[in-house]
Length: 111
Length: 113
Image: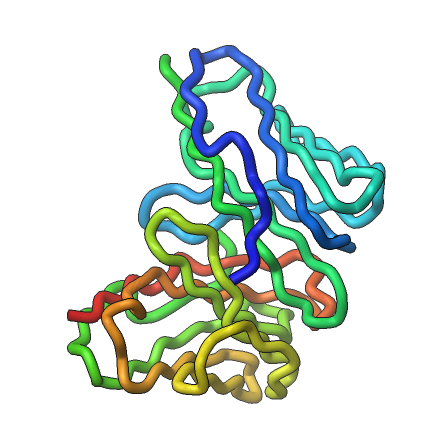
């Protein structure tokens, strides 16, 4: 099935470092969502974006809806060990209402 | 915690069998979507129900079917199970069919042997 291009696939960083990940799509989206998933759990919504150019923060997390509506990025500042997990971007566009997900970015934080 | 609950949490079935998975949506939400997440992949959209009507479907064969009930809870049924159906099945609920924010349950881990 269709998936977004999410990069990087994995990151291994030191506690306190900043992290950046992004998603690109060949299609225009009206909504971008960022989720975090931990082992054995469902994805947890972190940030939702609804307008091109929108920049939204949630604590140490900041996400932007790209101006072309075909991309989005997520930044995590001053990472901590509990940031460990898989981060997924998801986009929604058109009338089908489905969310199209990226393959995820595995984040490992070394204390 | 999202308020979206799924049952069972784990299930083992034999190839060819049928399975029913259940989802209770978050209070106040009338839209439920189902996703299949294979190991190492992002979730793939199966279908969405809004007020008991199916209003979107992904690229899954007809042996994947579903229902939404008047209380907006939902079922996913899979017939003639295949080994490749082994995955985490996720249910997400949202306030309306345009899908503002979708909140996921913890998933049902299905293993087909």
